[in-house]
Figure 1 (tube, helix red, strand yellow):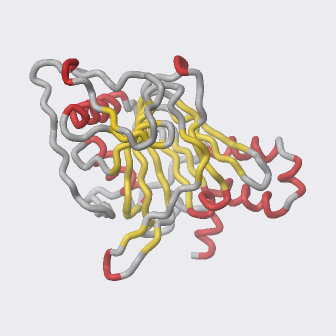
Figure 2 (tube, one colour):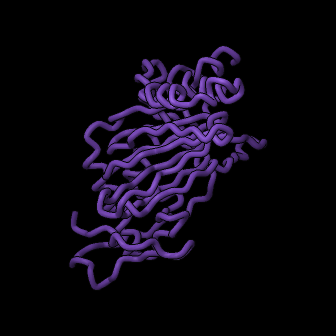
Length: 275
């Protein structure tokens, strides 16, 4: 990379902006201006959209099973047991190495972030990490969104790039806010969240509020996770803090949207049965 990423220092206060020191720029580094398209973002199916593709194995299953076995509360409370069962049967998805060796993508995304910060757009500090809303100036970001949209048959309503500088950047437990689309003359609510990770490995954790039980899985470079509205309603999720020096820079690409169809790549058994 010709430019460095933001320094790994204590996160600034919420809604402040980070811009790279102009004095650190190397000669010839060009800042790319951002275009200002409005939300919602609706990615259209690409010509090579894999409608007939067999669903990849869901690696979230083992983590959820472990959480269920370790909680006596879950085994005794029928409502909580049902929540975990729905997450287990496909409401949450973890697909390791979806993007293969994602080193090049991490480099491309990082360079786009640095170039944008050197220009008119800084990263906004948000909930203990940095973010960019729908960075449509980044071809790498848009390419990742398109692949996620194609595989999950997802119409994307909103998107975000999250940047974690080091282990002390983190994401508190939260429920996702709903994104809406007013296309075609009526309001549609999103029903699906998907995220792709690039760079350093971190844990993505889900916490069940009634029982306090947690299941988590690693997010390594190239991995993706996804979950439906039911999981979002019944579980909070977040990226736990670790020691500052135990994790390097990480970028996550997040998309919220509505599934065009329900299939074995994006839906659980109960959804497919009731659709």
